[in-house]
Length: 242
Length: 242
Image (cartoon, rainbow over all chains, first blue to last red; front, side, top):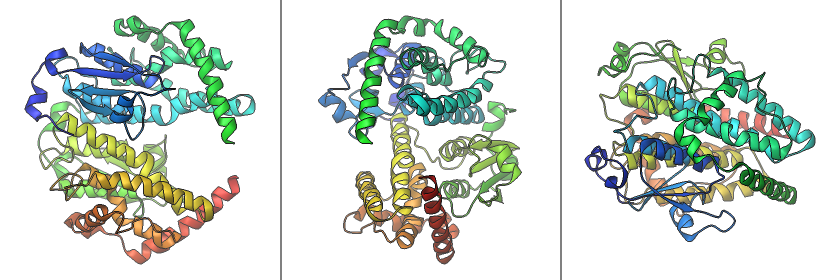
């Protein structure tokens, strides 16, 4: 992997002046969506490489041989994988615009802690509620509600997780605004109760009005259809492996 | 959580001038060990708070209520949790000495990618080989060998994962040098084959000679005894939950 020099990367440029940027993604992936938001917030021009996860491209397998997953960010032909890693890379590389991570090391540690908590615990438990039914779903639902209760507390006194403006954590938790309602609809499970989670509910509203989020909001009917299909697929795969 | 200002944190000071530092840890934990190495590499004076994980202290539960785990770094009474998050915090806070992460954003992304790969895949698969037996252990062993094969390739042409000197990734993969042989001995499973992994084997030798690593190397007999005990505990817990 050829690395650019520090000075080369850190000259304050953006968009195509910084070299070619391509994003391998799938429109229905919460992990890919957060990178699209970050690039748009930073004003970075990029080319979208659409991936069909049922029939992955040779390029995706070449650029992410370890995980074989989207998103992959390709910057000047060099791939960067894992969505939280990509988010930090985007923030450090296109650093002449507003930063996604705060400057203070303690605040940064706080953001990284909650981002990991989301990816390790909140999102996976909601995914479990999405692909199960009956008693198993009830258990996953309770776990998700418990995790969302912890997330709720992080919004006390704040409009966004980042404070007054959207930051790193808003992009990480962004799936709650866009996809949780789709999970509820397709899996007949109630997760985002307005009474129980008033702060997350208010944040969902605020987040959905952020221009780059509103502009890229996926079509609801298309999402419902895709998520219904994926649910069947995941449930049959799980049944087959038992 | 009271945050210090950016300037306050970034004045180049170290040790006690930067405020009080305490590390909640257990001597046999690979996750806690990497923080001790980092603090010692940075020359940060700290107080060790010994935790008995069979009887966790009120302070540990107070400072890490989400995960209730070591390590926790307490800096001026503010807790930082999750070992990779702590490593980045240590590197950003005590930044007047050699940095653990490289400066180049692409190289940093690379380090973060492999650190996550270790924590999500390599270490958990070795842990599985440690707490199983028979066919289940054989499966975990094969998976661990596969993951170690991927790690091996990251050392081509290098003395350390960080290049000529120890860096972030060496601390993250450090458990391979200290604990893998203990796992092999206590679980009767061969993982670090010298013929198969010559580069990891050479790195293990180099890493063990780094002064802060050599000075803090845990007593082998004590480790064997502790790891034998923990193996019995984990296996009986797993059996009870089936």
